[in-house]
Length: 317
Length: 242
Image 1 (cartoon, each protein chain N blue to C red):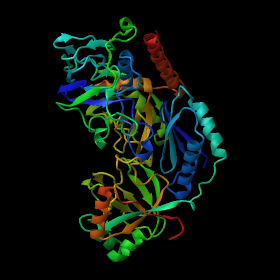
Image 2: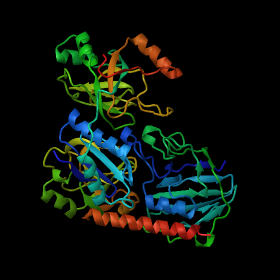
Image 3: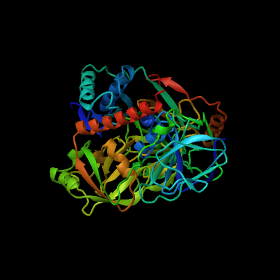
Image 4: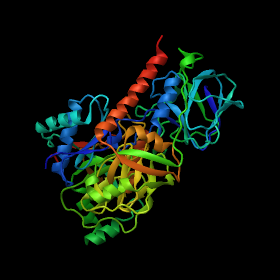
């Protein structure tokens, strides 16, 4: 066995890039909440970037290694340590059999950490994916969060990777208290008057504690008003869709979102800004800034190019 | 109505092909879905058909919004009509009333007909699956004859059983797993609406036709046992034959 869970933390799940192709049957894609940190963990650990890794929320897990393997920890700073000795984050690190990797409580810089294991985790794919979707008891380890005593094998553990000296990045600084999210308007911004749309951008909102893998509920001082009643003929939902139900309080749809829904959606948070939200916590203030679809896609492609370049640099012979 | 392209962030667009819930509009959605399945557009990762729109998820690094919109517009111009007569109809056993269908008698009373007549109205017609959503395999389906007059219950139930069959107006949905629900429950099916262990886990797909076939509680239990053993095969007939 690769690892044995000694302490599962608050919410630790197996996530790969997501379960795609099944939204037409009502299956949520799941996948990582913070795609950037997730991709970086895999790239540093020498994996293809969508490989299954562990996502830990607020307080991380303790994992006993039964085999040597290289790992990388990214995302929220949960003060990772091996048998009490701090481990650098955003770096490929070899862990020996018998050692215990422990991630503790977040120190406030982000709330979701990712641990990628070189060669990947031995998790059976369900509908083409290792991602855990707890709501439907699907994927991962028995469709649930990790529990004490769970054992997960490694597929092809490594003791070295090409360019080990280069497998090191500067840790990310996540938003504290305030964040700005860029938004592309639509699909149902026409369900609001121009003035209401302006108000959406003028006045911020607070992240409530109803914030999980499915969505993030916001609280505005003044709820948004629809032209109609806020209901639409059910249509598709994307990662980052900002639903505004009848009560006028927005909900941003995240990794475990339903594939379809019947509430108006005023806009969508752009892909490159979603990790800022998914690393934030209840009480933070959010502001929205409107951008064009062209700019949003340009920024997204730039992000992907950066990841491609990093991958190429690390894996060249 | 002309197609409306509703931007859903930088990796998805909702192509709206009508503004009502109708077979005609939904079959346009199916037509586009099938066209893009047969001749895929490079960069499109998946599509989600709903009542009147097709959600197209795509990779902007392969195709940008403007190019995708132009390509879909081109495809819409020469869309073939979906031929329904070639379809098959699945027979879905349903045990009405009792603990499986606690609202049956209330609903019949509301419609001012006998329970027997109510069951006939619900089971005599073929249902069209508009879409799947909400939960894996959760089918939104409708018949086009003899609609009921009741809508949702005044207060939704916190949890109803999986494999329940619920109804309002001309709609009647298949519920895969336990869930909250505000609709009236008419009965239960012994068939798994979603079974992850199967190669195709979903009892019905969007665009499928099916019919509810009344069975007794004894037959229900027998079928349920056959399903558990893996020996049950869903019966079908060619549309237009029965």
